[in-house]
Image (cartoon, rainbow, N blue to C red; front, top):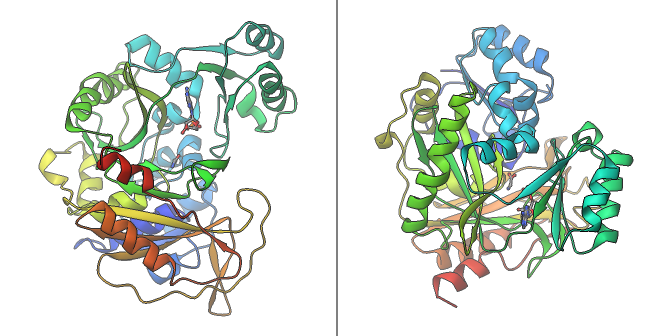
Length: 424
Ligand code: AMP
Ligand code: GLY
């Protein structure tokens, strides 16, 4: 089967490598891919948001299957357009992708169907939001309704900070139309867990759990980023909590989407917070997480393409999805300065990888045959091992062998998870 993958980050590199290992995989195209993905797929310079261009390419090449992973094409209806053109897809339709595309939609869904989440109020005018925030008790979380490159949630400690966030979103429109509506949300506390799941709208099969590290600096300090590293499994996510999540969150969400006439098929990502009142939903994503995918897929023992075909066909079964007992760690190497200003264009030297090691490239391009940096998050150094401790050690050993000017990484990915394992 010839396969088209829409996207061009570290997550897509991980997806492509897993698909490549499938016995049924033929040619793989990445739209647009990146300089690192070029080693594993044919990269075609069509943007992930150029829906018409993607459909035209899929038809011209007669691809048998398409996998759409980034949020924006999904929310724009890329799957609907491809399916209409006769190309079977893995990924939710536009109607279902709204679960990530609108935080107001997903909050209302959770309220209507009794799915545990933070209490919140929705505002469409800055005046009303400010009046509410004057009387609020802090901290609270202010969220733009629509997609905002992962930067649409701000935790504020007082009215001044809240007013600045409202001004950014609703008056200065820094996230465009995404800030026309905002949510003011109760601040929750507890460990965060990411659970990606496969669902065909009937069955939901959670993948191995993971933990993201969103802040730029060690000790969870500094600015929020797209993710500086991940580990899997997440030690806070015990079998008891997993069972509770299945009963109170995962199945009710799938059923709620069905009841709304928005059946979700694809990868549904549950961003959870384990509060003292039980697990609550912080966010839904309509897709694989980045960089969670980079630790989840290396632990998948089953054939990813078979699973994706079963999801598309409404034939998902438990026995199709098997994970190994081990652990994985991904250390992101970024350009120094990310998520603010940074320089690019530096040559990258990659070491040979051994069994249980992967390098997933995110922000790099080929220039005269050389791989050079082109983005904030450049690549992920990933290792799997029997234990989390060993996986972390190996991921850092691998990361230390990768060189480019201005490289930056956190030194404490997995530290909190290890402490939790040891009961500290
Ligand atoms: P989001 O854009 O919704 O994924 O939020 C980004 C990050 O903000 C999350 O990963 C949490 O760390 C934090 N966050 C979001 N909502 C809340 C909340 N209600 N309480 C505490 N932290 C939150
Ligand atoms: N790592 C969080 C996300 O993919 O949104």
